[in-house]
Every structure is written in C-alpha cells, then in structure tokens.
Length: 256
Image 1: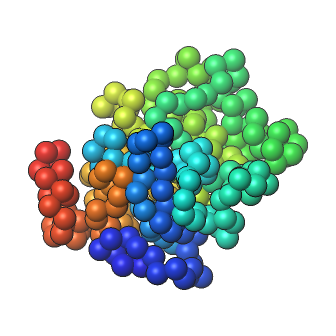
Image 2: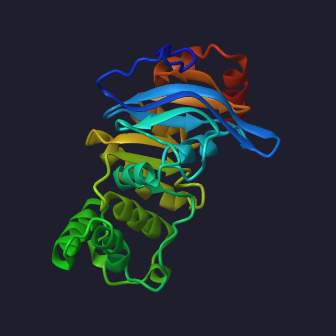
C-alpha cells in the first residue's frame, strides 16, 4: 500500500484483515465514496477524520454492509462482501460496531442488552453469556450497573455498555462511528479510556472521531477523507507535522 494515498496494489498481505479496492457508493446522484482503496492490518488502529459529509461514516458502515457499496471490492477477514446474505452474516458476527447513539434496548437491563446477541446468534447458554457479560462490564469499568436499565445510566455509561455489547460477540474487528460526539465533555474521557484499553490489547480498530488527542496517542495511522476520497493516510507524527495535502492543513488549522 502507498501510505501517501491509501492505495492498495491489488495483492492481499497475510496480515491484512480489511482490504478495500476502488470502493464507490452513490445515494441517487450523490457520489458519496469515490474510489476508496486502503488496507488495514490485524491489530492496527486506524482513526478516520474529515469534515462533515466527507464520506467517513459512510465508508466505515460499508465494512459490515450497513451501507451497500455499488462498485469495487471489500474483503473482511478473508470474506468478500457481496449480496450473499451468508457472507454478510459471517462478517457481522466478526465485526463489532459502536454508534454515535447508544442503540440500547430500553426494556432490557444492562446484562440483558449484552447477553442477547451471544445467546441468539452464537447460541451460547445463558450462564456462559452472563459470565462473559460480567467480565466485559468489569473491563469497561461498570460491573455495578449490570441490573440497571439504560435510562438509569449516564451517556458515558450507556456508551460503555454499547462497547461491552459489541465485544460480547467476540469480534475480530471493532468499528466506532463517532462514539463520543453525543456525550457531554466530562463523559468523553471514560469512553476514550475504554477505547485506549482495546487498542492496547491489539484489537483491530477503525474509529471515526474528532478526538485528535486520542488519534495522536493511540492510532497507528490517521486517514482523512474529503469529498468521498482519502486525501491523506499517515502515521500520527507525520500527519500532524508533515501533512502533504493542502486540505489536511486547512482542516487541522480550523480544529486545532
């Protein structure tokens, strides 16, 4: 891959867990993704940034087929994303996703939210699913909230439950789509701490976020989108100190 533009040369390396080649996405006449090519290695943390409407959230949602791309190839953990439902189901079992909104079931307790998918999809017995859920609640720092309902939690706690719920499916990849943008400033830190811990555990992570301090500290690469294309793909030190594309320099000058 050419790190200057995120392009892949067509080959898939042994440690590539996500490969995108010339990915295009349209909404009617609007060309949301314009030939996006990149690869993500196992255990890599990639932070995706860019202005509103640049295609970054659309791109990350194509990785688990929440958005369907119309042209190009997306290969996730050796499985190509096509209209074959079996492939989509296989990828969604291995790819966890955390959204801007928490999307917790209000009628279920924290424990019920986390154990539902492992029991329904992975067919785990309730006791095993509960043990996994409690371990994950310990991991995200809120085991005492297990029997509460989402409405009884703060926004930061709800987002940590959402992360635990995604991890309960034992994914190989975690996708984060602006996970802190709906939170009050004091709650952002606790969610970023969980994400830092995941990054330190060698989890493969793609995160759309405007938290540039987190990106500088944790990311292996920072990828910037603009007008549906990757305009920069660099390690944090080079991205912040030596960005090549004028659009990156303009963007950073507005938000730093």
